[in-house]
Image 1 (cartoon, one colour):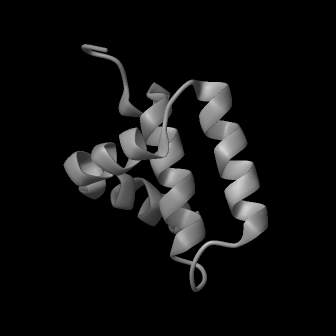
Image 2: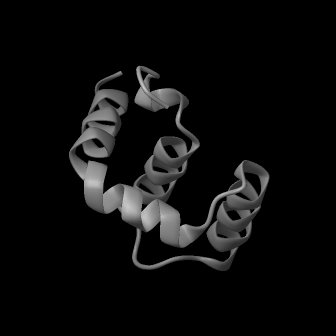
Length: 71
């Protein structure tokens, strides 16, 4: 994905979704898990891939979330 904006990367989007929901409350709800698993299936990625992406790009994800909270 060279030169492509990280915001167009499905892993970036899934990581933002995961972190934004998990930071709002204690643990994962069943509803979140069902929605999240559906999103992952639609994107053709796994939770393990999202976790690996977060390990490598957490700062970018947190920056995106911080920008959303300022709006």
